[in-house]
Image 1 (spheres, helix red, strand yellow):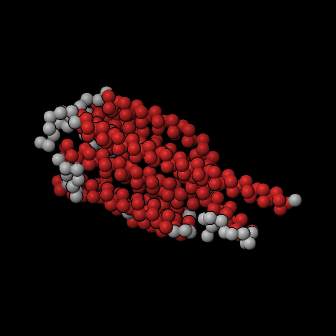
Image 2 (cartoon, chains in turn red, yellow):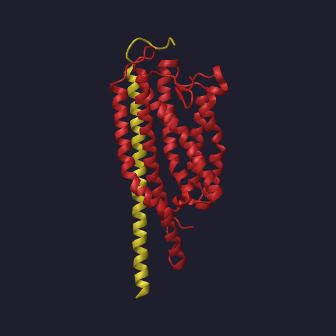
Image 3 (cartoon, chains in turn red, blue):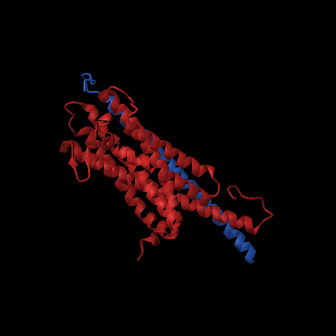
Length: 254
Length: 58
């Protein structure tokens, strides 16, 4: 059976409703375990001291900031090509979560930068790319709010999202592209290139990254379900307004 | 390096975790609020539409 059947709102609501309690509990448990492990049962770093523990919130939030943008871009591209409303709504649902986690990555990065680099902020290619990516997130959310026609908003926000993908790539690969011109160190872990850290830091970090993924999937499903309900409510309002033209147009109806 | 002064520097760790707690809690609260609002709106509209349909069919 085709995977596109999951793009049907009724099917999406059924499946997401069944998955949500599992995701929410897994997320809560994983984040709690990662937090207690990282804060209480890992050693201090020989150079950074206790500040190394910031890694357990900074790396997962930065990873999610970039990956959520990629997820939004893929969902937007699918929406534009196949005209599945659920794809647009998933991208829309993901944006506030991505913006929040990008902000968290920037704040925790600044807090970590002060004791290790000696500065809260530098106009470094990686840091600047992440900041621009945050502006794309905010622009995307603002554009959805600014356009009343949801179909037009879906198309225009998707184009905006795809335009910003270059900054998501830059956020991920700036250290490789700009080499020693960046203050930010290379990735601590890269698929296919192994791990550049001690196993004592690595495992709690993996748990926290899993927790952040579960946290994101939980929230994005709740938000996407809310978006689908809002869309259905809008359709009912429009149908009511068309059936009873004498009545005042309800709020939100175009 | 050279920027770290001696000491545990827990204040930076606590500040980072406090920021995470605030932002992640805000995301959860706003998400649940949006979900509840959408569900309530839809239920009210569906109930009104049902009532209208029943009125129309009698």
